[in-house]
Length: 205
Image 1 (cartoon, rainbow, N blue to C red):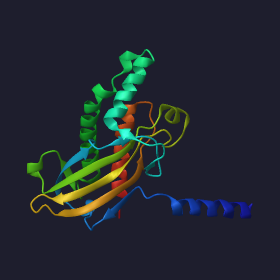
Image 2 (image 1 turned 90 degrees about the vertical axis):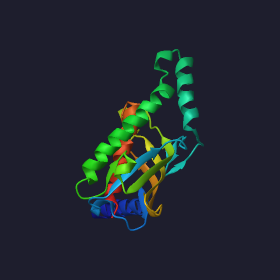
Image 3 (image 1 turned 180 degrees about the horizontal axis):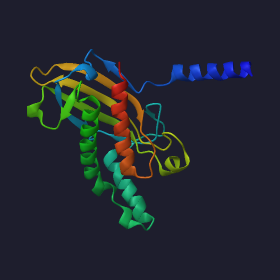
Image 4 (image 1 turned 135 degrees about the vertical axis):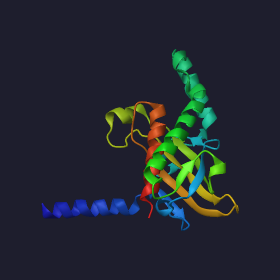
């Protein structure tokens, strides 16, 4: 029994040693100890590619998000469910909801002692730009029949904070692989991965 437990422990250590770090930081800016600092934030989806992601890389190729959304609508129409072909139409609203959700959750997490964020650049000293380079929307099956984050959306990309007055980059981040919780709703899986993104930023340093 003791030998078995030692083997399990060794396997766990090996797995953790090779686990991808969700976010890595280049720079000394401390998000959690920047009380009074305000950044105008933007989440950039315009360059996003969609596909199946494993350990921060696409495993079966990818397509631009506009093509992915259109393909989902086409598949619904072909399946005789034209009333459900709303991906293209709903995407702008999902992005806007994501902005509101991200701002509220971020300020709840960081706002009292650390960096707070706003949509109003005139009220900010910094810009906080988040670029979602890759998106795996997750899937309903994993969300229903899996556990933990199974079926949850996955993102990778990069982010940077810039001093508005000087244009100098203060800090940059590589978003290697962040996965949200599973849910049957595509829209809510996006909100959940944004929530997890905030949690991973909070775990830095």
